[in-house]
Length: 141
Image 1 (tube, rainbow, N blue to C red):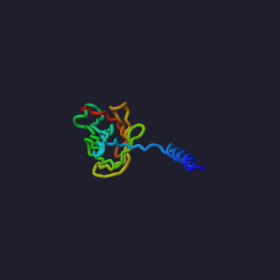
Image 2 (cartoon, rainbow, N blue to C red; image 1 turned 45 degrees about the horizontal axis):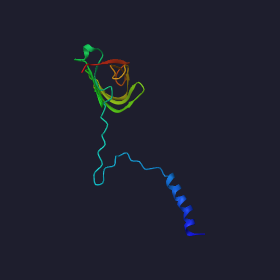
Image 3 (tube, one colour; image 1 turned 90 degrees about the vertical axis):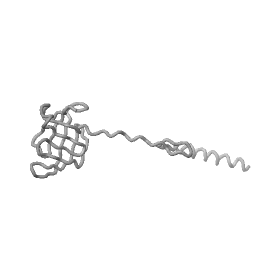
Image 4 (cartoon, helix red, strand yellow; image 1 turned 30 degrees about the vertical axis):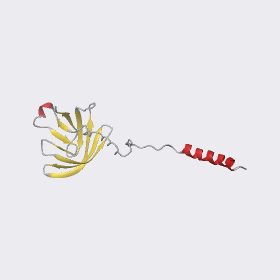
């Protein structure tokens, strides 16, 4: 057998090997030789929909608002909570919190149910140091 005929099966086998290997992809755009890759834009931070000032009625927004931050809540009364863990749920958020109220401290779960379409204009607060569900309305900015 001729040496050149022996190469044909080897070349065919090598071509099959290459066809089965998927092309490599990268998430970063490649920069021209000698240049650093362009930085990728970070997604803009979106605070949770509960962040802001809320009150039981519009007349209480000036002096009786609850202030929800991404990491806690403070009411116009003596309740202040630090959020340990915030998890989105189908209807709003489930929050593990440490709360101080009337001079005592307690850990517990707070459930926020958003009752309007985005951005929510009302929500119901349950759990934590509060008795029963409390419905709050978003205060104007």
